[in-house]
Image 1 (cartoon, helix red, strand yellow):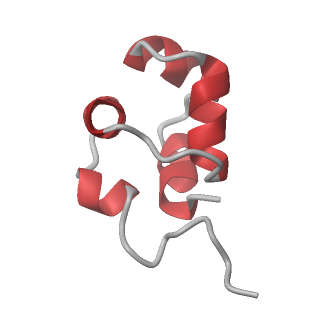
Image 2 (cartoon, one colour):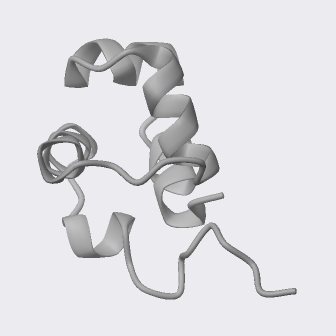
Length: 70
């Protein structure tokens, strides 16, 4: 899970459905991005950062990787 992104969504008092609508992406796509199942495109990162009023670097910071080493 992309923790910083999830926290920013929660702090914005938006649901993922609302955020998806505001960013112009499918709710399922946003869910996959938050879960870390897919990597967002640059335009998706920028849209999320704009709507959440956060820098891209904060939402998608290194060390916030969805992949956990075994």
